[in-house]
Length: 133
Image 1 (cartoon, rainbow, N blue to C red):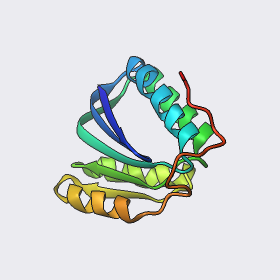
Image 2: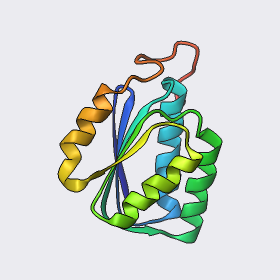
Image 3: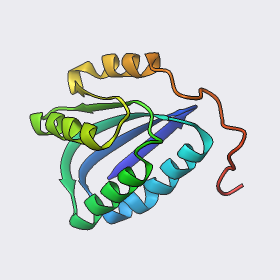
């Protein structure tokens, strides 16, 4: 399951249980719209009882990530498992933005670090269009 909340140029995503293709069908258009509105948006990704992906879901994630890898701003990953830390380090190979892992006990530090990061543009990009408007 994926839940999300957007505030200004930052999206907070909570990924829990096993992620499905349906989860990605719902969240990827939201992220796409955020990328249209903001240059280098920030991401706070919380892994809560995360159990991985269905096969089709991981491919959607990889394709989307590779397509937009140069558009992502800084990312803070918050989790509670060493494999999640490794996953974050592995992602750093493919995504050039600053990606940092924080233990679940360090969520406040993750928020503070992300807030201190400068996006390429802190305001809405006037040259882009809003999807659905």
